[in-house]
Amino acid sequence: MSKDRAMRHQPIIVSIIFALMLSITPMPDWAEVYRPDWVTLTLIYWSMSLPRTYSIGGAWVAGLILDVAQGTLLGQHALALCLTIYISVKFHLQLRQFPPLQLTATIFALLAFYQFILFWINGVVGVNPSAEVYWGPVVSGTVIWPVLSMILSGLRERARI
Amino acid sequence: MAAAKTKQRILSANSPALGLRLLLLAGLSIVLLVIDHRDNHLDTVRKAIGATVYPLRVIVDAPVSLWHWAQGSTASRNQLQVENSRLNAERLLTKARLQRYSALEAENARLRAMLEARAQVRDQVRVAEIMSASSNPFHHVLVVDKGTRDGVYDGQTLVDANGVVGQIMNAGVLSSQSILISDPDHALPVEVNRNGLRTVAVGTGDYDQLDLPFLPNNADVQQGDLLVTSGLGGAFPAGYPVAIIDSVTRIPQEPFAVVTAKPAAALNQIREVMLIWSSDETTTEAVIDEVAVVDEESTDE
Image 1 (cartoon, rainbow over the protein chains, first blue to last red):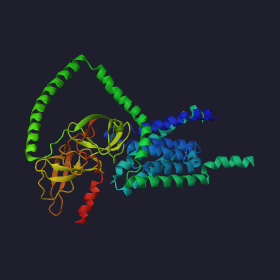
Image 2 (cartoon, rainbow over the protein chains, first blue to last red):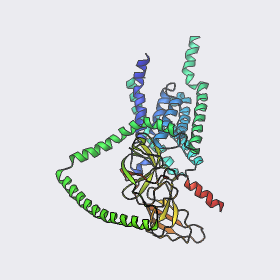
Image 3 (cartoon, rainbow over the protein chains, first blue to last red):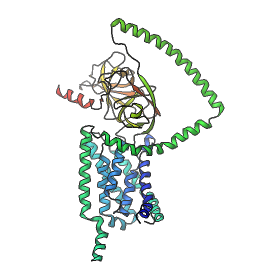
Image 4 (tube, rainbow over the protein chains, first blue to last red):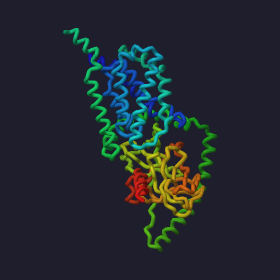
């Protein structure tokens, strides 16, 4: 039973690892600002669909890995991710009922919230931030969301979870 | 009874335990943030997590290395011949230069002996490949494929063929993170090669620009001056080129001139860097906090 469950959850784990890889892939300079928050988007999707399995604990661990991978302060992405995922778990029943357009708007707000926490921590620590660098991932993440959620729901139907 | 339990199970994602867990994790993150910001007690934690990221990096880097390999193995004979002759010519040229260099070095040693100064020992160098560049615009970080296993240590200097690139920030076992000189948090002690004027070059977050915020209006700097590491502060060995002065703007009512410099190394285009094992023993200290120190000093006055 539990082994079967682990098998079925494999695609989800793979999708999260893949998101982690996308977030450390080298990109040209101009595109760097518009790199979507792959891990955040993927985790929002899974926490919305399976809030009991993929909750803030997993998000925190993923955030720590992101911190190490990107060389930011330890705990920065972890804090931002677990707060963002908290919102999506808390309101997962409502979020699932939203029509696609409204859901995308909500994703925009969630991503903005996520970036705001990163921005805030950077500000406290004393890194001088410029606004466009924070808005880039929010915009690109919102644009990519419909495609990503389609891919992930396909994955979910395949795995029959 | 059973129905009530199922109902509770359905709603359990919103159970009070979630809020509690959030508080716990958020608190833990903040503790981590504070400890990590204050000092570097978390290096071991970072290294442990870094080890799990290493395979991901290798996979991410695989297409690029595969591409390079494919390019190399499908290069035509003609191309290889052209490259070969070019390299041969280059080798002759550098050899000739090196001859002059060794003569100069001997002369320098002789002069230094006359002055009874300590002879400068040659630094050891090893090439490292870049595995990935930072994906965060505020942190110019490179990951190189050498770690403590190869003798890399925190604070070690990285250069490329043209000049200083940065220093190792976090030496892992198999790979290490390094901070670039263009990172907004980074500052390095430099001197103007022409007249020995010492100052500090601070990163701006722009790969093509360093700031020299502590030069007074009457300082003797000009556009085109070469900045080299001064070796003060103990983190960088002396004498490596860092940047070339780009612009000097003197505003009469301001105490400091606005001076910017362009790094000698093409910081966003490098694939290989050289790690330097300086023969000087005092080179392990980091100067990342140097700006803060200088700031405090200037406010004291």
